[in-house]
Structure formats: structure tokens, C-alpha cells
Length: 414
Image 1 (tube, rainbow, N blue to C red):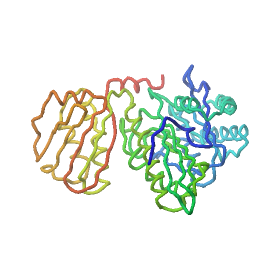
Image 2 (image 1 turned 120 degrees about the horizontal axis):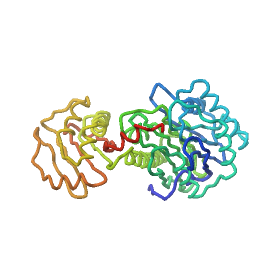
Image 3 (image 1 turned 30 degrees about the vertical axis):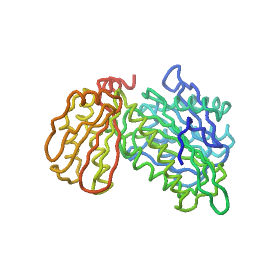
Image 4 (image 1 turned 90 degrees about the vertical axis):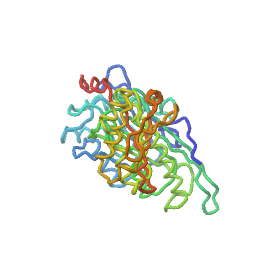
């Protein structure tokens, strides 16, 4: 059984964190975080699909691909260290070397994360000073985790954390073991599927083969982080990293058995929770938009159709304006790509106030406009699209498009 708990990056055994005001870009606010593992950890990760990859993405991807253990993550906000060429890689290397010296580990065991404005160089001396400050303040407390989640924010309005405990089945005479998995993420704008503008860091005390950890991360991302969109832009810095300390004491997961399935379900739960928090906190957003496509012929087609609806600027504007213009949902399905019969599908909008059927049997339906307005006035707006073709389904999440989105991005650098 997977149990949600109040926690974050320090919930699992063996993990500590710290944060500080380093003065990278934002005055009078925490803008650096350090995650530390008491033991060398297995690591898995996924990164941006943008061909322009920030220096920290290149640094981390090589470490993950090389398969060596890691013990620390240094994150700064305000400046992305993207579009900085060889100088950007030098900044990553010297930041990692500083952390390694202070923490007593190899630089190759230090991962780097940056988020913020593309172009300027990160002020190395401030990064190094921040690392030294944080190294002396590491803690596994709930407060430390919450402060770290706040420190990695850019235009986010709230920090994003999630954690679960779950029980792995008894193996080979060993009893069942309770395992913990938690994490934090940031993301509010420049968010689009196939990794979005986000940083996400997860930790677990589950002992699991590194190859299987990588497979689990890839599987979990597909229906969580890759199913959210805010504005259709895919960032240069997207990074998801998952560290495993193995300190829970479970028999290591070395094959795709029942224990692996439980671990994957828990990992997916945490990734989904963080992904939804990011979609709900889209820049300027007033509504979360959830679209569930059911009755599709293939899983991939279900994903494509759901993402098309939440990614539609017209659907986003419709939700913001509380205008039940169902033709916009129908249109977004139609240009998504997968074939379907418009005469058979059904589209509903569902909320606490009830359900409104927009479209059925090839025709727009007469519906209760007052009830539709009630639903569109709720914080979360949900559409269900039944394609009447099969048994596959998928869910995507996005947010409405508001005037504030333009205001935020019109002066992002200043």
C-alpha cells in the first residue's frame, strides 16, 4: 500500500539538505539548495529534449550515463547557465570541485542544477560561497526540506514537494520492509511535454539495481512529467534526478518482480503529484485543466489527444474566461493527429457542481449554461473525452492562459 506523507527531499533515510541566500539574481531570498546523501547513491535521470542543452544538463547527463555513484546535488536559481558555451561547463566543473572539496567527495559525485535566465554567466564566487555556507548547515529536518524546495523556485508561487511510504513484499525469508520516497520540484513557465521547464529531485532509501532504477524513472516520466504543459515551450534546463541510498534495508530489487512493480507505482505517484503541482502553478494560472481521454485505440494516441486539449491556447483562454465553448475541445482533438470518428465520440466537463455533456453522437449538445459556469468557476476543471474506439486511456494536465502570463514573461529578465 502506498501512503502519502507530509515530506519532501529529506523523507528517505540518508538524505539531508540545506539552502541559503547566495545573491545569484534575486535579492533577499534563498536561491541555492544543496542535497546531500550520507552514502554513495545509485542515480537515474531524464533530461530536456531541447537540442539546446544547458551546461548543467550536459554535466549531469554524463555522470548519469557513466553510471558512477553520486552523493550531492548543488542547485541555483536566477541564472540558467544555458547558452554559455565552454565557460558554462567550466562553471559546472569548478562548482562541483568546490562542493567535492568541502564535502570530502570526488567532483564526479556532484550533480549540478541551474534555472533562470538564459545567457548570463553564473557568478562562480557566489556559488562557491553558497556551497560552503550550506555544507555547514545540512539537516534531515522537515523544515530544511521545505526551505530547499522554496530555494529552487523562479516564478513559482508555491514550493512543490511530495513523499510516500510503501511496503515491499517479503523476499527469501526476509520480512516486508517499509520504504520511503520523496522529492521536490520547480516549474511554472516554459513547460511542455517531453520534459518540461522543470527541475525535479527525488530521493529514496529503497535498494534497487541501478539499471532497473533507470527503467522505472523512464516509465514513470511518460505518464506524469511528460503529460503536463503550460505554454508549449520546452526548456533548455529540464532535469529529473532520482537518487537511491539503499538504506531502508530491503532485499535489493534486481528483477522486474512484485517489489519492482510496487516501487514503480510509488515513484509514479510522487512524480504525478509533483507534475500536477507544476501545472496548477503555471505562470499566471487561475485554473488547473485536466483532460482524461478514455476509449482510445492505443495508449500513445490517448496521450496525444489528451495533451492536445490541455495544450490548446483556445481551450486555455476558454477556461480562463469561464466560457463553455465546447467547440474548442472538439477542435483540439481533431487536429491532434490520431484518427477517430467524430460521430461516435463524447465530451464531458466534470466538476464538484456536476457533469455537463458538451458533445455526443456527432452533435454539440444543449447543456445547462449555469451549471457549466459553476464548473468553470472551480479551481480544477476536468474534461473527459471518450473516443469509443478501445480500452486505452491517458490523462494530461495544464492550466488556463491569463493576462498575467504575458505580464510575467514580458519582463522576465528585469
